[in-house]
Structures are given as C-alpha cells and as structure tokens.
Image (cartoon, rainbow over all chains, first blue to last red; front, side):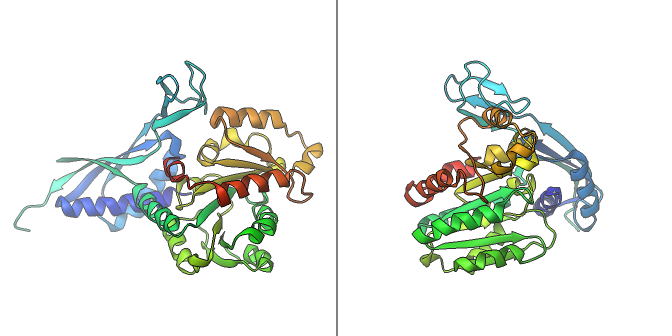
Length: 119
Length: 226
C-alpha cells in the first residue's frame, strides 16, 4: 500500500502551493495518475480521505485522471499505446521502445478561494 | 479560482534518489536493489552472491526488514558492513531512509552496496533508491504468471533471476510462459534461472553480476529513467 506514501507527498505539495498562492477552502484537487504507476484508485482515495484532515486540502474532493502508457519506438519512431503489457513496437516489431507518458503522478489542478489581503 | 500545476508526486523521492546516485558515483560505489516476494529467496541469493562478491570487493548490505533483524543476522558471517532498516510495517523503502543508512557506512572503503528491499512486488518498484541496478527475483513456486501480473517490476529491473528451479519438477511452472511474458514486457531483459540452494545456474548469474558491477561503467541514465 504505497498509496499512503504518495498521498502524504501529495498533501505536502498542496500545503506548499496553498501557502504560496494564498489559497483557502480548497474544494478540488486533480491528479493525473500514470497507468504504469500501479496506483489503485480506491486505495488512493481512501488514503487521501483519511489523511487530508490536518492540512489545506481538508475539505477537498480528489479527482483522479488515469493516463494511458504511451511509448515511442527507437527504430521506426512510431508512437503507440501500451496495452496488456506489450511494450514492443506494434508497427515494426522492435523491442527498443521508450515510454513517454503514463509513468508519473502529477498534480494538475487545485481549485479554491484566494485569501483576502486584509487577513 | 483554479490553479494549474504540473507538479510530480514522485519528484521528492526521485530527486533524493538522484542525489544519492551522484554521491555514490563520485565515490565509485555501485548500489544494487534486490526486489522480490517474501519467500522468493532474496536473502539466500544474497548469501550465495556475497560468498563470491565479497572476495572481490568490499560489500555493504542494507536490509529492509518489516519487523525483525532476522535477515541481517543471516548475513553477519560474511563480515560485511550491515545496516538494518526496520520499516515498522511499511511495505517498501524510500530514498531518504537509504540516505540515512548510507551515512552509517564508511563508503570510502566500499565497492558495492546491496539493498535487500522489503518483500513485495509492487510498492518497492515505485520508489527509486538511487541504486544503479535493480534486480527482480521471482521463484518457481510463485508461478509462471508473475511477470504478467507485476509488469512494472520487470520493466524497472535491469536483470531478472528465477530462483528455485530445482523445484520445477514438482510444479506446473512453465519456463516458456514466464519467458514469453518477460519478452513482451521488457524485451532484452537478461534472465538467470537458478537454484540458490543447489547452485545450479548460479555461476552464470555471478559472472554477469561481477561483470556489471565490477567492470562496467556506471549506467546512471537507465536507473533513473526506468
């Protein structure tokens, strides 16, 4: 259950951004999760909902967008979606391919209200 | 208001891992990260590997053990420097814990650091530790479907070991099926079927490893990108 470790880092980043951007009442957090990252949707949400109370994201709803794994062939340059763990090139059959999408977990959006200057 | 970001949740660990790798490179130390299930034979493979490797270079071992120091006790007879990280129930090691462990070692006297990760096929894969070489170890009794079920491990690994091949006659394990999945997931991944218990196939693994960590140039790009 590495989701808890990921969520702790996620919440730490949200706190940093909230302070930097003077955000309060964060209502939504959107995270793009690469399908190559072995994250279980329910476990990630469960970890988030259980850990969020202490920080800036305490009232936030988590939106997860799963990003398909995309690779580029080093031989023919073809770009293809990796499905059922087939990482070799579907066009030319080459085994030397490089994954270019779907391997990271990225916070893409935070929605909230900006603090007033007199606070 | 909506704030758009592009901030990776993986970055903090990966940055720390990259710092560790650069620090090890500067000291010409290579670090190996062994990942496999509980019971795959990680400690036994490590024992058999240390028998030969520790004769060639000074080896240190970092043991990730959830609750006990039992694995560490098994390795003490090799006289290697040993740091035990008791993760207290956590299912994987992270780069900051490795940084702490490396601080306890006299790196100027060491050629190779071996990390025995917590027995788990998923979580350890998600956290780069600053290692130069990830070894995936699976074993015959676990079944031939492990690469297909845990592709991320076999993607991240630079080499795979299949242990306990002496038990193959007592199971339905198909080496062909195992290899076919590996080829699909990570074409070109070297595979060493062996038995750490009977020593069958062990020589080939030790030859490869020695070549890789004692003579090959550091391959930093691969470890960080995979």
